[in-house]
Image 1 (cartoon, rainbow, N blue to C red):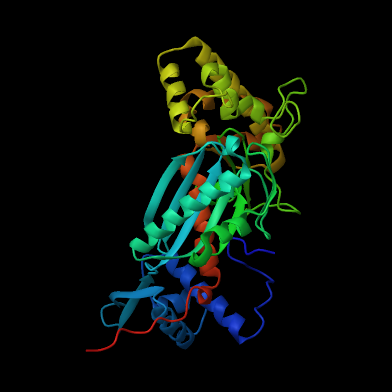
Image 2 (image 1 turned 180 degrees about the horizontal axis):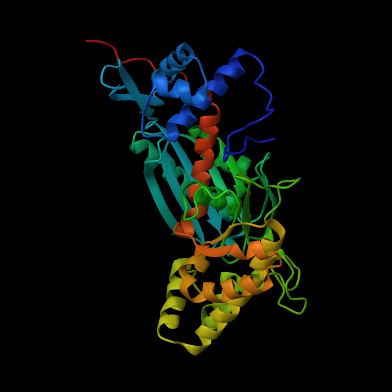
Length: 427
C-alpha cells in the first residue's frame, strides 16, 4: 500500500507507530506539517499545537535544522514581559519535487522546492497518442532529465518524480494498466523512467492525472479546503478525481474516477476504450474539436499536433465572434457535461464540481448549460447546492498535483531525504 498524501489529519483510533525510529519519523512529520501550515512558529507554539513535550520538540528541531528542512527566522516575544522565542519556518530550498504529466498531445512539468517555490514550469507539445509507448517514454525521459538539471542549477536536489497519466494506474507498482487514449497497456512506466534517468537515481511514482489534479485543487485551487469535491479533467478524454471527507477516494483497486467512460448514449460514437457512447465522446476536447473545427480534428494524417491551449483559443475566438456552429456545439457539450455531472452529484453528493482544461477555458459558454442540467437532474434537493466551478490552474493542474504528491512523501518521512549535511569548515 502506498502512502496517501495527507488531505486530512489522522484522528480517532489510529494505532501509534511501532518502535522508537518509527515514532521519531512520525513526530518529525508532524512538526514539518505544522510548519507547512504557518509562515513561522516558535518551538513553544509547535509543542502546543502538536501536543508534543517541549523538550521533544527542541530535540526534533535540532535534527530538522541539521537537515536544513527548517530555518530560524527571528525572535518572537510572548507578551510584554515574556521570554523571547526563536521562530522557525519550513525551509528545504535544497530539496526538490518534480511533477510531470504526459497526455495525448503534451508533456507538462512543474518543479518546486519543499517550501513550494516554483523553479521549473513548462509544457512541451508532443503527439503521445501517435508516438507509441516506447517513443513516448523516451521523450518523457528526456524532458525529465532537462527538468532535473534545471532544478540542480537552481541549487535543488530532486527527492522524487511523480508522473500523471490519463488512465488506470497500479500506483503501488508504477504500472499504467490501461490508458485508452494513449494506446498503452500494462506499461511499467516507473521502472522504465527510472532506468532512463540512470545515475540521477531519482525515485519515480506514477498516478492517475485526475487524482493528482484533484489533490492540487484541494490544496491550492479555486475550491481549496472543500472536503467534498469532484475534479473533472478537460482533455481529449475526461477523468475524475474525487475528494470525499477531505481524502482522495481511490476505490478497492485504486481505479475509481474513470468517469469519462460512463455510458451516456448507447447509440453514440465509439470511444478509445472500445465501448460506445462514453461520456468523453460527448464532452472531451477531441469531440469538441471534431464538432467545431473538423479540419483540425485529432488523428488526421499529416497534420501537426498543436498545443491544446491553441485549439481551445481558436474555439473561444469563434464563440466570441458568434460563430453559430461553434455556439451550438458548445451548448450541446455543456448539456452533456451537466448530465454527467448530475450522475456524479447523485452518487457522491459533492459541494463543488471543479472543471479543468478546456472546460475551464470555455467556462463562460459551457457552464451555464451544464449548471441548468445539473439543477434539473439532481434528485436530492440539498444536492442542488452543488455547482460547477472553473479551475484556475489551467492545463498544469495534474503536474502541480504530482509535485505536491512528492512533497507529501517527503513530509511523511523526512529521514528519507538525506543524511544530515556536514557544516562548512571554519576558517
